[in-house]
Length: 498
Image (tube, rainbow, N blue to C red):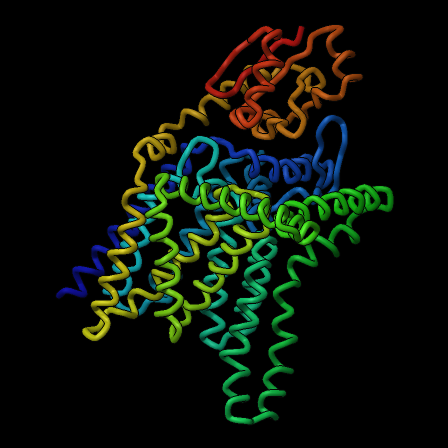
């Protein structure tokens, strides 16, 4: 009777969450990064090739696109079926992936009604309590970006490896790595530890060296599947698809991107290596302290809650040693360590990967503690989990995700500039308003291209801003004070340049 009641409750909660996710997806505004990524697919749909275009310059297979085709190609095929490009097609593709993952997780990985209810309830508590999951410019479970899908694929990959389905496990790792390449930082060491502990160490311990060698020979070729999708998309496909003159543009853009990624992905550690002195160590510690401050801001500006999350992750690492979710918590630790001590970037999206896979690991691990002998451990973990989750609830963030205001404002701006020649619309450097470019199917000009700007000003020239321009608020205020404001829809503003 209890199991039947829990089964019904699980289905009700699951159905309600899917309804919420689809409703929130329909209200979502356009995210900067995902719009940028989708512009190349829009160009491909238009028949001008898989290129990113801005200020009259075209980059084929633009390396800045940081989310792989696993998320966007299905949207592209749907565009072909419906006959036009739509941002929200990609939103619903992302939602469909996540719903499919939850079905796999709740009703595939977990085996009974109690386990399913505990896992789903814990996830929903975290999901709705964490105000960082919602907001104006970024809704990580709604925006078509790679973090959520890549994390789900990592989860599924470790589950399949634990089930001894090596081929499919490593293949899913490959799709995860292609979807979000920066997870390689945590994926490689975690997979290496899994292979050693689960496959090689038992044979070594028993001194069965022949069996150890045979397992090593079998697992190494299969593990290379981790790199195949990324290599095909980023290395092989451009060589096959591009003519020689475009290959040179692509190679130059990729070289510049590699330098940028090395600088941003490992800049904090590189600076310390180059200046390993008391002063250099002081600078390094100052940057790390700032990251800790950022984590504090993710936890309702509370050091206690941030420390409670750290304690929770450490506790999970210790208690889950005999459960396959241990590798999820290990992955989280590696990724969090990279973000804290190596990366220059301080965005929540990076911390999110570590936090989200921890929560998925909780959903897999906590149900295994539903026994009389382990019930006190389960209660302790649930108390700690609730302790750092519940205080983070933000009704304002939730409302922002559901009111549809940002989507409406962008659509109004789309209509306003629909008849303006794209050569007369200028944006602020990299803050190039890709959301409006996608909506209007126009490609804007760079305000810092003085030659184009002076030419356009002979007739009429316009300056466009969106939410992301608040990153350079002072520059915007100084720049636009002499412009005529034509129209303002929320954060989206169109000025006439004098």
